[in-house]
Image (cartoon, rainbow, N blue to C red; front, side):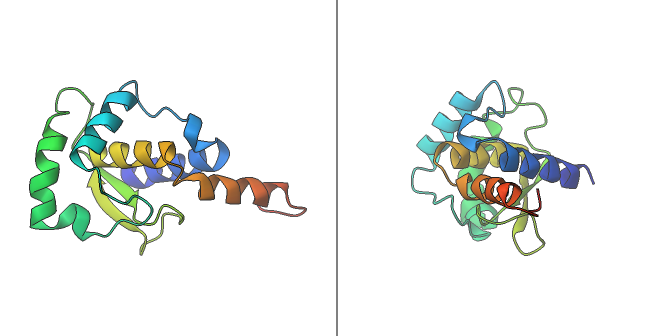
Length: 133
């Protein structure tokens, strides 16, 4: 239930605020730098579940995640993560990840422009006459 509420709040945030200006934690710089150092080739636009959940992926993610133990509060709590950055939180587009995985991926998505589509779609929809907003 808490993960669902968090997902809803986050999606509303990237829908209403230009994602490139969002700061999710005081440690965004460190999280982003360490994430890209560990996962330089990970394409964030559309994640595949095996990039987070396969045995090989878990082996690679484990040291990254554990490096934030005691640094990021609730670093290993279950959090919902969108697979396709262009889409909403739906059953087909959501995977359970740790909080630090969510933060690393979403900070990178915001900085690298992957969440721009969500923001633009919400902004354009709100500006249209009779648009949902």
